[in-house]
Image 1 (cartoon, rainbow, N blue to C red):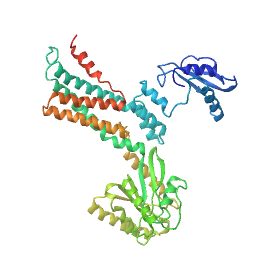
Image 2 (tube, one colour):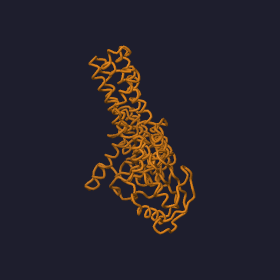
Image 3 (spheres, rainbow, N blue to C red):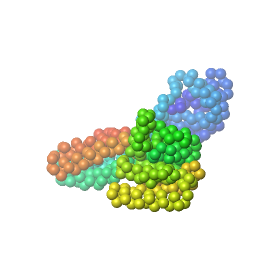
Image 4 (cartoon, rainbow, N blue to C red):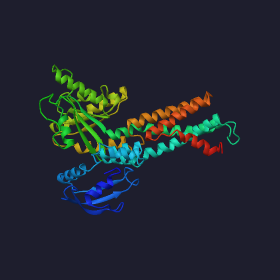
Length: 446
């Protein structure tokens, strides 16, 4: 319960108000009938020292549906009580200054986190990783803006030094570089939230659905010896050594198809491969033209994405055939690398028997680890990226105008734009802070 009547609700349910921030064992009763509902732990957090900044009461109930429903019903009969809207506790915490916007976003990501890497990133945002940096950056921008505006408005004052524009730009230059570095890592942070996209593609009946099921360790896709069974994109979310991976099974790609549904499946397969971070190009080792089919891994849009050749069904060929196939593939890869500047690696597996699967999954995990470097990303959402990009643009504009001696008023406007952008990032904007700095630093009008 959060709000000014939380005290009333807690007293109505347990008959007293516990000592602040001390867990108290209490019997919960329906205030209308006096009927006992549960025995629970009750906690009382007076404002402003609470999660939402308001009076907050908490009951740690036994988790049965009947218990929860009875308590909610009892509270609902009290005057002034209603169910919270989705996210309303976090919204109140933000409005009361307990969280900034980046921390609220981090809390949402922490709740949605499915892997340890996502949890670590979200917790960093919740504890203020970006918000604290943004406030520090904003303080620097306000300081620079105060210098410029002091030079404009109070140049005749004796205690205001000269050449304030140059001093301001000395603050802005390293700040612009810091924000540029944060933006450079934004794609990594956003990708970790969404997960690495890995697409299994290749000719029909190469064993793509079997491989998906093997890696997912469940029957996620229908497996059939009939080519063209998979028509749509099937997605499975995986946790590989703490990193999020979205594994997609796609329709088989072949040169000729008269079935319009199959053609649409191939179109979607190609589109998924074009957007993927990594494509596992699967071929049937027992196919007569396995080497030629494997060579299709280098076809467009291969240069735009990373691709591995995965030779499946090695349990169906003998050692001599495998050696000939390996030699042919190495020759193909060497030729393509010389003419297309593309790097391809080869894995030999049997999705049916599991041979080579452990190594393939381990390599996938290492690939994810290489993509998601251990350094925490400051920027993890598109909103943050867009806002910081606008701030970086404003700072670049201020530096350019200062170099061109275009006028201090124009420089100040760009700095105000940057300060406002950083305020939007955290949800805290106060233009009066600029004047506060001017009067505090230069004692104008004392």
